[in-house]
Image 1 (cartoon, rainbow over the protein chains, first blue to last red):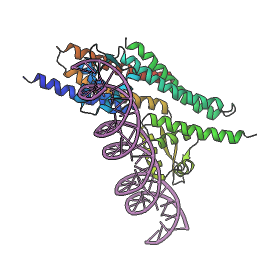
Image 2: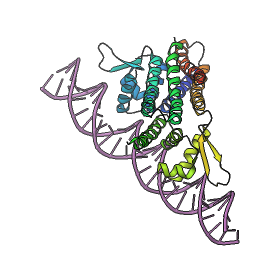
Image 3: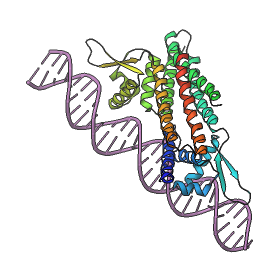
Image 4: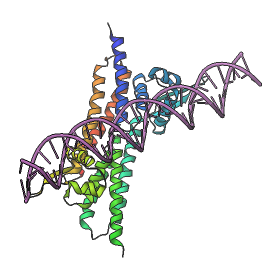
Length: 152
Length: 152
DNA sequence: CACTTTATTCAGACGTGACTGAACGTCGCG
DNA sequence: CGCGACGTTCAGTCACGTCTGAATAAAGTG
């Protein structure tokens, strides 16, 4: 019977995976690990416990939690009679994640549209090609926005 | 009348923008610039011209073009009687771009699904939370795949 | 067959961003 | 009021990936 040990290995593994996934998406790896830990454990976890369980400095936890908080992925909560900060998953973390992605796509879309506007009308070749490029971001942005509904 | 000069400024600007967008998406900046140049100019461009126009080393062009080629964004073509390699946009660069994105999402989806499978059935809390996380990647992957059709 | 022109590869330089740990300010409790 | 626990900030360090430039290989030309 090693189920408990196995589960713990699975947990460590999962947290590490989420760290790497986060890194792929341009987030600090530690932020991903914090998120993964909260997903797996589900509980409300104390600031200090995060540093201890993940074996990283408190400074890293401070910046990771703020990043996650800013993106609406986790929530900072106070416990009566406790001085420490506590964290739990936000109510709708994945929806907020999608919104962040959509915002990034929209930024790119705007920049391209901005250039497109300034191209003289008689430069049809250039306009066509940049227009196709712009439509890419239109499509992706729309797709991500639509996918928010699939989550519910 | 400074339209020609203006257009050139727009061009430089656009190329630089695409470089930054590419960087956001995890590609080398130079690869983005090469892509941007080909979008704007439209022509078939020689290997050596890329290095010269973008003011970067030939080594950089070599690795940037290969990356873009691997992702199906540009195509390497030969010109009869010319020793140099030439490049032009691929037939469907944006579709291929979406497929690359979809592949990345799918990789993440698989990794999470993989963990989920191994969680014992009686750990309902953990399973629920990881399941929600998995659904995020399901939704995104599906959305991106769907958006391929919007391009046409 | 030398010679030039070309693309690739690789070691090193460089810049960027993440992480640490110490210093700091804050707050509550004794 | 002092003390300890806490979160934040910031300078320093480190690791990583990108870019360069030189060496290499291939391929055409005279």
